[in-house]
Image 1 (cartoon, rainbow, N blue to C red):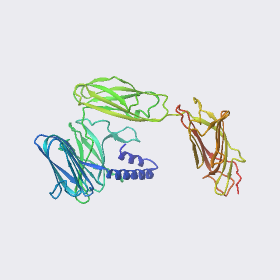
Image 2: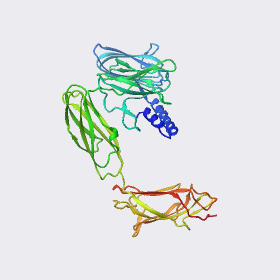
Image 3: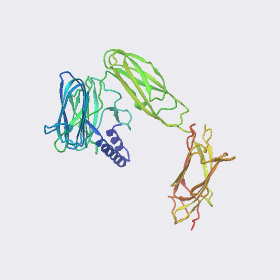
Image 4: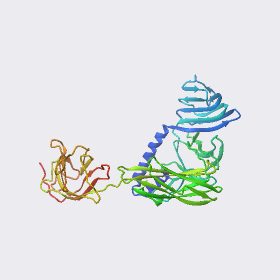
Length: 498
């Protein structure tokens, strides 16, 4: 989900103000973090055949540090010139200039705003990177599509964009700037085309979107504009896009989370280029859940779409929630450069058998005694019934959690002792829970002292506000657990303790 979609989701909920404020604060924090990270302003991969290349490096008025790195197979000279026309050397104040046989590193602590120029001479493969710390952040750029799921909204496209098609794009830039223009550039830094992204009417989010005609060659996206002090800024996406003539799609709305057992997922593959045969592979995040891909090869004519399935076998003996990330790739058998992929990311939540407390019996005469500070002693006597399929529990090996109104306490494995009649925790000299017993015949008893209660008014002996009482015995690796929450009005009268 993109920031744009997240804001729109907030507007459709009754908690819009809270959610919008939360997202705004998160965005500000995230943007602040990114502003203290290095922003890419130049990324170039080229081949120097004529022996020379000049590169502009614009530093805006919010720039704090400038880092330039150069790598070249056969390097002859590296010259960096500041906006005043002065060459930067290792003797220049606040500059670190390290030069080696095939690379050079330059660090300027407080770069002067304006246009810097890098001049490189030599031959071979050239790689240049310039980064800056700045308040102007190219926060996000994505090619997007409608997910088909209302609460997800627009989401980034899977894999690489398709050459020769049009795709919606969304960009987010944060910071103090006046204008923002966008271009697609080649890996060598040459402009391929300008694109138009228009501001979206979303409060507190500097989001721009528009339609982009996808070229056939690799490209990055560069954002340029004027900051509030009239100086040029430049930001570039780290990601390089490689347009493809094959695409894979998966209907997000057709499936929820993965479940234990066999999961069969259906994908569509479309060939947008000449007739070709594609091999299909699938991997997960080193979990080993892939059961089969059927078929493993498909031949498609131009603009033809076919389906294939991927089977996931999720073990039934998992004892913890896990994230399952599936990556499916289609590769041309005639050209290894033609390939695309899709990722499906789902959380597998273990559903534990429930150990149900069928009823809670409270002893009306001595269950709760209060002092004027609304703290008191507590005795709760109850019964439980194991849920269907549950094969037992063992508090000596599992964590136990108990809460009554505002009071919460947990007991780590090993704090209970097993007796002939059940499981016992005892701490008579302590505060809080002093005794907790689970009987083998379905009974339990809790005793506590010094408990704080939110629902009690110390001026009355009749407590009528709802309370919440819960017990949970944690998962012991066999999908065993107990959980019950009892809320409602207590109708017993309790004697105040003066």
